[in-house]
Image (cartoon, rainbow, N blue to C red; front, side, top):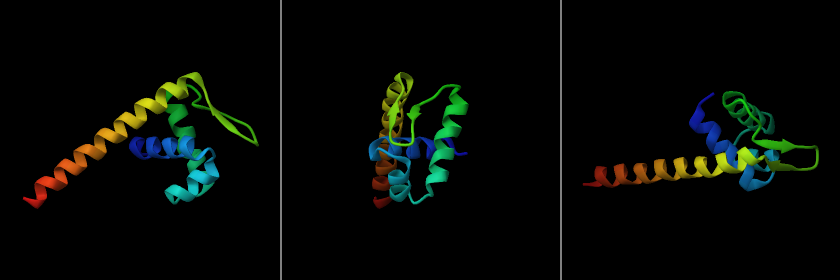
Length: 89
């Protein structure tokens, strides 16, 4: 899976509070959202979310990782905006 997309899906999942809510926001099925989160967890070798049938919460590492993901995604958005501004000239 694409690492960047998985980070986007992970951030959306945390912000939305559930995989099904995140799925609606990012245009994926809840199962696909789960696969993106699982792929990140497998890649990192640790859990990011504690999941039960009723709720989810960040693990300690997940809380740190979400901040890093947000920073990376923000930086990419800034770079894209700067590139778009150059195209206008």
